[in-house]
Image (tube, rainbow, N blue to C red):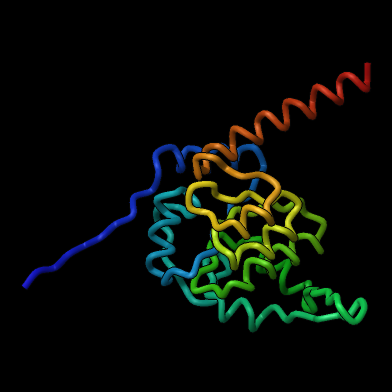
Amino acid sequence: MAITGIEDPVREGVPESVNTANKAGISVRMVTGDHLDTAVAVAKKCNILPEDYVYTQGCNMVMLGEEFRSRIRLLEEEVDENVKSIKIENLDEFQTISDNLKVLCRSSPSDKYTLVTGFKQLGNVVSVTGDGTNDAPALKKSDVGLAMNLTGTDIAKEAADIILLDDNFTSIITAVKWGRNIYDCIRKFLQF
């Protein structure tokens, strides 16, 4: 008999990049299909959750997908026969959840899309990373969709605005730095 433990280690530089993102005013959220305990452990290693965090039911910091879906009701509006628009019906409840939400675990493929929809309804700028076919709707709906080059499917890459060549979170932070630098330069030029 034997006991085997398998761990997918957090990539080097990710915890520091999450800290940098938080300092820059970017809220990092983790949406995963993983079990609650696994999601909390990974989020702690990535500095998304504090090291001393302990899950309690009803806490909006870590939420199960089933609870999220029951509290947030979706409203489907038909724009015409071919296009349906989805909106968050209970936007006040979504605001309450989204103010504290850091990890959404045991989520369905549609939860990421729902999260993007709600944040956009509240007037936020939303960026999404994804690699699977089921991430394509959220990548397309977001303001900036980031697909993984190495592990990403062709459908996710087509839906995204940017493809991360090295599949690394630290590359997102580098892109944000350059983007903000260019934005500042354009503002200075226009002001001059």
